[in-house]
Image (cartoon, rainbow, N blue to C red):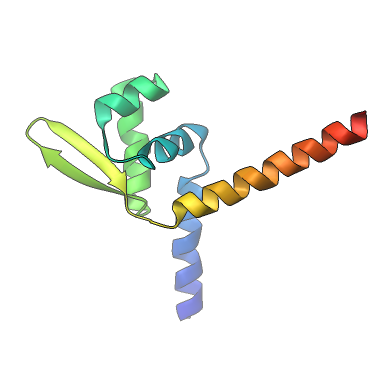
Length: 104
């Protein structure tokens, strides 16, 4: 039963990372905290869409929130996420190189 609950929580994290805009935000947050306005400029969506994405990331425990006056700042809460994203990028690059090699 405990393992099932753990898997459910892990699945929430993976599901939250399953949108390109959220991945862009997470990658931006790897360099440090960002305010909502910075993330909005990066993504280009309206503020309500950005807020919904950030809410999903917060609910999954991926980011934490710090309100300072009228500004809201987000930062990564999962320290190993950098390693995971780098690992998946390397895997994807390798697969692409293999496909390119086959086509030659």
